[in-house]
Length: 111
Image 1 (cartoon, rainbow, N blue to C red):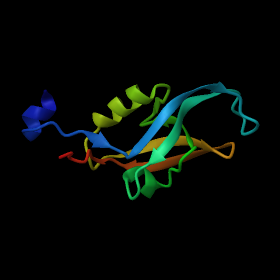
Image 2 (tube, rainbow, N blue to C red):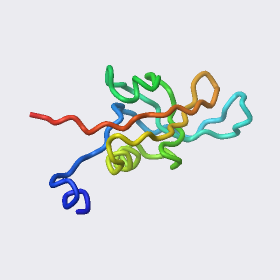
Image 3 (cartoon, rainbow, N blue to C red):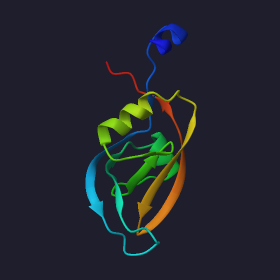
Image 4 (cartoon, rainbow, N blue to C red):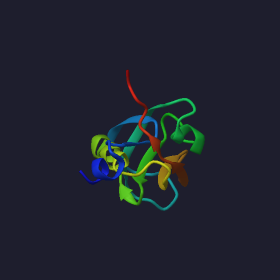
């Protein structure tokens, strides 16, 4: 409701990925015993995640300092972030933990 009052419409944040939850797995190295997160299925070309360097098959561990254990819940959290904000996203790629920064955009309008 605050967004509607402030902006006159609902503005949803968007990073341009789709993904699915994975069961906790054990890392082979990097000092992390167990990894739980969201595996990236698709990255929107030229979207915020693609521009930040996220690729298909990366495992997202956290978004904006919150654990990414549910794809739906994580995307709902992103939707609440004001476009223009930059958020940290921690991923696992090739058994390495990487922190990327994504500039949240406004969710694209659908016709």
